[in-house]
Structures are given as structure tokens and as C-alpha cells.
Length: 336
Image 1 (cartoon, rainbow, N blue to C red):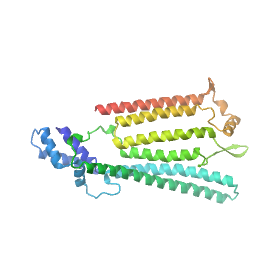
Image 2 (spheres, rainbow, N blue to C red):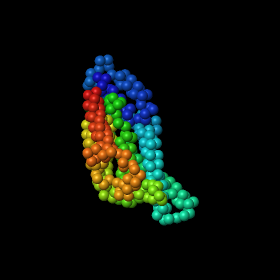
Image 3 (cartoon, rainbow, N blue to C red):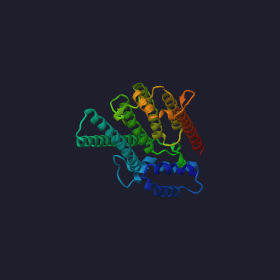
Image 4 (tube, rainbow, N blue to C red):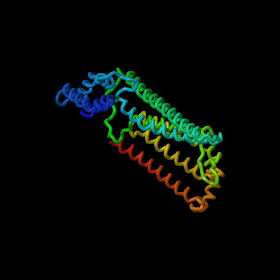
């Protein structure tokens, strides 16, 4: 009996701002029990719930403020996403902008250092601000789509909602916040685009080393960068599918678990394949490492560099353990 009531109360409260949920739960739960006779049957409970109306329409009556572009129900998650997505994207792209500005300044051969430094700083800041603004737009766009698609679904089922379709009251550990799925998709798209630009030479990047004179070396070989392009695209597709699964179910479901395991295992296979390629580093950078004595510090085991072996083992252990954890969480919370 109480299970149906708790599911209904939960479905109403989850659509409201977090600060109002507990108070609404207590009030709504008390109202429902007041409307029921002692020892009420399941049919009597269903009748009362249908009289109260769909959870979506009742939640609207509890709102003290009108809806906005991002409603109070999603606003806290929206702000939490912006708090770490915008600084992360802005700072990373700003650093890349500094590198691009320095690269352009060296290519131009300018000797006016004040002009060079100001150009590097302005390049980094402008790229960082632009990237942060784009992250803001896409994050807002993602939340608007998620919310309005949910509203459309609720309005479509306003007259046909069923008590049997009420969501289960899940263990809090089983929940996946909407912000997590949206942030994952946004960050993945931004960094995948940067990776593709870098691999195709549209985002020049080099590291500076002191070897006699100041020189610039490309770290990775062009053949390896070409191989990275399909790997980035596959990883992007898998990450987007996983993000969509989290946005759709918002809990540890079979869909989320399968997408998580698939991304982990396929990502592991791609990483191991790329890591064991013979010509990862450019000829110039390999020569620099040989001359500096770094290569001699890492012994070979059966013809394979010890560092490659260690990294491969860590990737395998990490991917398998994460997959097992995902399956365990899904089974555990489905049973509950």
C-alpha cells in the first residue's frame, strides 16, 4: 500500500527544486493519508491518486515561481555543471591559446618582445573566453532540450498516466544526476574537437626543448596522428551514447551499464593498439630523447619498452575493474 504512495510522492517531489522537496513530501504524504480510510486497499489508493492528478500537473501547483528557460527543478544541476565545465574548458583552451600564440610568434620571427608577449596573452585569453562561451551555450542548450522533452512527454501523457508507471523510489547511490550526463557529453565534444584539430594540423602545438639553441619539436609522428583521428571519433560516439544513457535513465540501468562497459572495453582495446604502435613519436623528438639519455633509463623487456608494458597493464586493470564495478552497481541497485 505505502509503496504506491511513496512512488507517487517521489514522482511529484523530483520535479521541484531540491530545497522544497522534503517539505512537499511531508505535506503531500499527509494529504494522501487523510484522504484514505483506515486499512485502505490498493484500489482505494489508486482512486485517490487519480483524483490528485498526474505527478507532473500536481508538481506545477506546488511551484511558488513560474518556469524559466531552465526551471527550478533543473537549475541547481545546471549551475553545478557550469561551475566546473566553464573553468575547465576555459583554462585548458586558454593554455592551448598561449601555445598557439607562442608558435605563431616564433614562426613570425618577431624581436619586439613586448608585442610578442601581448599577442600570446591576447590569443590565449580570447580563445579561452570563446571556448567558455561555447560551453555555456551548449550546456544551456542541452538542459533546455532535456527539460522540454520531459515536459512534452508529461503533457502527452496527462490524461493517460497510470499509477503502474510511477517510477520506483531508488537507493540514492543508484541515481545519476542529469548534470553528470550533460556535462560528460559537453566536455567530450569540446575536447574531441580540439583533438581532431590537433591531429589534422589545424591546431598547431609544439613543445620547447633546450638542445643547444632553442628549438621546436613535434612530439608525435604524423602517421600516429592520422591513426588517432578514427580513434577519437569512435571514443566520441561511445561517450555520447553513454551520456545519452545517463540523461535518459538517470540511474544504474542495463542501458547505462552496457554503454559504460562497451566504452571501457572498446576504449581499452583502442588504447592498447595505439600504445603498441612502433612510430608513436616523431623522429626529431626520438632523437632528442636519445641525446638526452632518457631512452636509456627505460629498459626493454622482450623488445618492448618497460614503460609501454606498465601503461598497458594499468589500462587493462583500470578498464576491467571499472566494467566490473558498473555491472555490480547495476545488479545491486536493480535488486533493491
